[in-house]
Image (tube, rainbow, N blue to C red):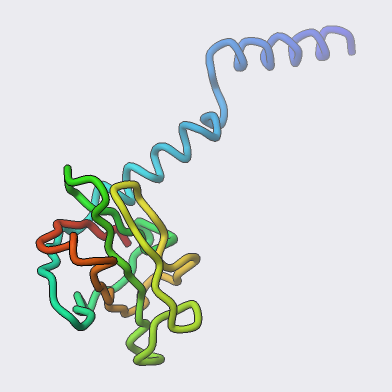
Length: 138
């Protein structure tokens, strides 16, 4: 009995020292973000009075959310965006509301099922957003 406990303790210690097991949560989150954002689609918004629609796109298992960020060096440039789930409605998600986005990744729809069809509706936050390159990851 003592020999079995000693062997089991030795195996557990060896496994811990060798790093056997699950990767740390931060490494898992980083890998998930890389695979999600690694498949981002790059688009360009040209200023206009009405909102512009991009898509139709289909979600995959790459991301759980639909995300957006701007690619610009101009400070103070933002876009407002929302998601329309085209199989169900013609209105934006979240009560037909837009969210404002800058150069950091931001979520425009959360917990979206794989295989969901959607468009991204974008309009300028203000007149500074003339020709803005942005990315969506889904």
